[in-house]
Length: 297
Image (cartoon, rainbow, N blue to C red; front, side, top):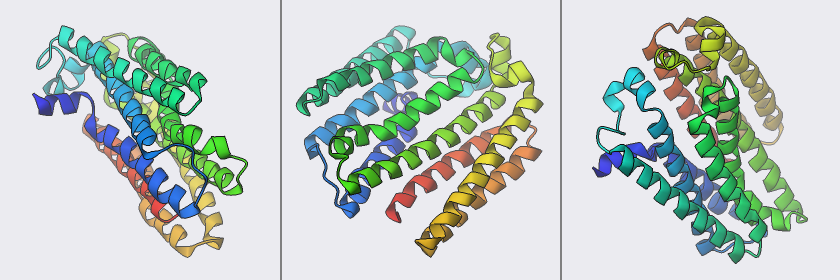
């Protein structure tokens, strides 16, 4: 049961969020010796709030996707098989309310009560995304990618921005924005890849994802164009940083750019559901290697 619960909340994705926040707090912030605003306890509240709300979003997403998942990936269906619909909704409510309470507690603890609205808004948008917005071509992809990017920036909002007049703080905020943009772009591309992978089940349920609206091949070509543009921008950015560090340059090309070029090549030749599944996994690995570059920065 515990294993199925971890799968339901997407523990791998949640682990990535935790690791990113830990790298920012105890590697990036520490090395730049910036003026931070929250204690270790408040940092723990922030992480738990993010994880609980994100986990709740994953649970409700599976709840609304029972029929499509039965077609797209029948062997991995958990809702209605391991957990009943009632218990799934109960898990969602507990996780989401717990996350909101922790977020509100953090906001008041840091003397920033108006930031409580952030956690309520994220929880609400995750519900709307699962219930309806994800069925609208591109809009759902953009929304979920923005939420993931913003979850990366939340630590900056609470811990760095209150002291943004400090030059080092301003620099670190800019670095965090770059990583958030990187996460947004990769996740946006990955969301479209997943829509192409799941096109059969989504079509049966009359959803309006990009591959259904444009056709699978056109959606594939659009994704290839976006991926190529993003890779080109990344090459330009990493080349610019070569003037500061050859190590950053080498790491960026070896573990981010080259895998993305390989991704573009494989995307051009992809035909089967399994091909797109492998491409989705490859993008997740690229995102991990990109985030681990914080050690170098």
